[in-house]
Length: 314
Image (tube, rainbow, N blue to C red; front, side):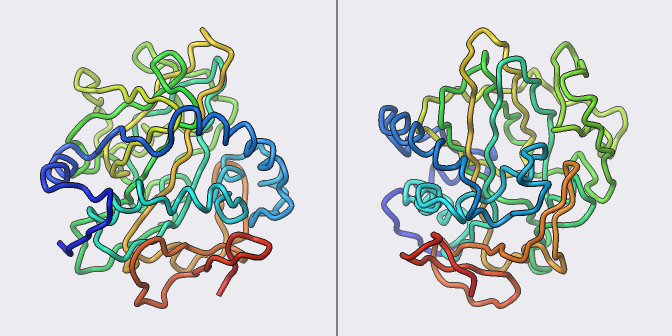
């Protein structure tokens, strides 16, 4: 493991725990009041999509989860956020010094919304059937991405916080080469073991390797977080979220940055994303180098600029 010496680097004990459990945290990125203050301003700015990299009708409509992707490419606040040392130092201490942020996503949950299915993601081909990240052959035993999920609001069991099953990140229970069937009419309609769960119009059970597999929810832990706290986890970790009970009228909002080493191929041979009932072009997309150096030429990249957009294609 390369020596990474950032101010928030995982200690050897923290790194060992991360590799054993599949997650680390929660840890503080912002003070509660700072997060609340910033989000009051930024949520209004983000309503302006004129500089968003995905200008396709599907993304603009807001009716597809793709509209939540990669707003760090047109928002100064989110561009700063994905590069914050509280996040990047910890990620680099697990992945090595050369790290890309290849995607970000918002995860809102409104009063009455269903929970998210138990799932794992390795190549992120789960919705489209097309791999979105591929690790090099010499690291074929690895896979997935490190996700850093930051609570922009309160996140608890009443309003839909994350759930993890520790230690489940080393074995995939789902076959992402299968393709799920998109059925938006099923949203908020499916009871799974007494809990309303879905996957943005999909049913993740369709990808199970073993049709009789059931996650051991007796081992699940809830990630209760305050505004400004973050949790770092492997995407191959079994994870889900609770439904929003509606006991409060406040939404739960998480923002996820996804990180891989620069050696990983991002959207290989792909010119557009087709999933969640929508399609967006990758013409203006680029991954962001957040740590170290990029010694490869296989990925679309963007670089930070002080004029206009936070990033520009190179």
